[in-house]
Image (cartoon, rainbow over all chains, first blue to last red; front, side, top):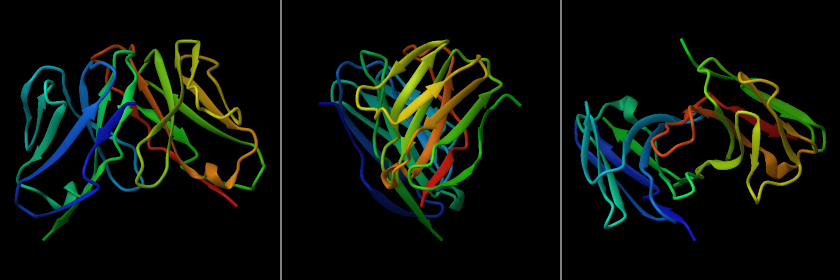
Length: 109
Length: 114
């Protein structure tokens, strides 16, 4: 079967750095997405990785290792507004998006 | 601004009473998706349209139907809602459904079944 694993919940301090991990086992691979979802709202697109390495976009960076079936989302200079769930999703060989259940990130002052 | 719009944002219905959720987009995207998301769970794809080509997920119950009368609009019909159908329903769009395609979501409709 296809599977995306992420931690259920993480806590971090305002101004700090946090890394949210995602491991996947899918039928083929055509890219990995990270989405942010605030409580009661729709997911919003953060990043896309298809090649190994680090993609940086402002305070957020996303890393991919295809050989390890692993990605992480790195959030720097955490702000209270970063409190949200972060969903990892992988596009498989049939171009279907396989979603993780998300990691709820709690930011404390 | 180009966007994905869902109406209503909150919908309350009674057990067994049909309900229709609507989605519209100004992005002129070819693909439209309907997802069901329950609390702290991954979004679950119900079906999607590539233009007018309808694609139903194998495990989507028959109770759920969809219509796409034109490029801009897509509807989700729940024929006889059960208590287990209470969830957030998310509409998303994308240009082509290809490998690098990004899905853009509407704000969602939260359905309550009494």
